[in-house]
Image 1 (cartoon, rainbow, N blue to C red):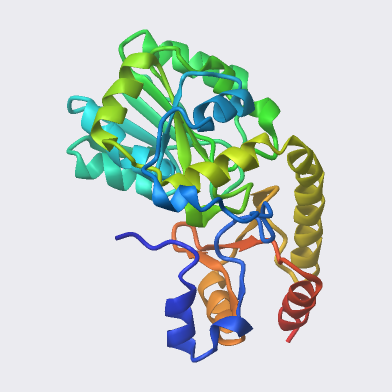
Image 2 (cartoon, rainbow, N blue to C red):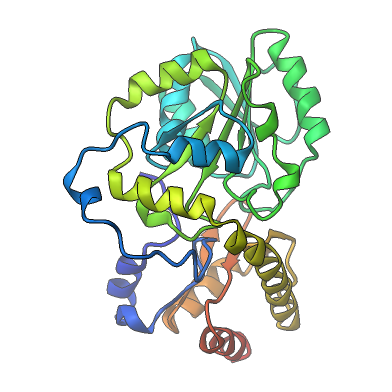
Length: 319
């Protein structure tokens, strides 16, 4: 198992700080999130059904019907490498470590790359990237996809952090052979706990992945919550500028303490520093959890969720 953000129970036990005293900035998840209403009782009593409206809500939200639901984009990340013969896989790095892990485990030749390479069969990237925040324009990605698809390759684009800037998404291109897009409900909507996401791809690949997922991969309560969130366009429109503004505020706060970000998105800021490990440890001992990376030495700071959290972060970075 790889290390990830959000391990608050482990941090609580390690540092002896009660859960309710922590400020968790380690995940890059919306700190407030979509307000979940009471879930209808029948969601708990019935098996999930494919025609419950979730896929039509997702099709409207993403602008394509070429998609299936899965138990978070992580489920698709683990299945995709099983659907190709041994391939040369380039991972645009640094990025979410599960991608390389999944392709390596399936027996592919995996290499970290910094750009598109003519010798790869599959190019995997996150856009915007996690943790660097790097954003690649859709037109460049379309060129890369055309090159890869022309030789039977795949372009796999993880758009987990794309919801705040949907104009940069490739979702409208979904359905083209060789283009695979991963979308998450967890980050922008702040609903990581429901474990729901979507795979956007061409019909044959979707069928193969669906067969591997099997029936009922997303529970009925999760499907209901995801459908309501995807249809709440007013909330979405409010949150995009809210997140962008608060992310800028976080960047200013960090810079004021000598931690000017090297990149970021609407949901996090990324700081490179040779002192990253020491800063992470110091903040953790004071009840603030950040996400530590070793290559390169860096920290990812998610958005504080309330005024108390902002004030505490500001104060503890100064002591």
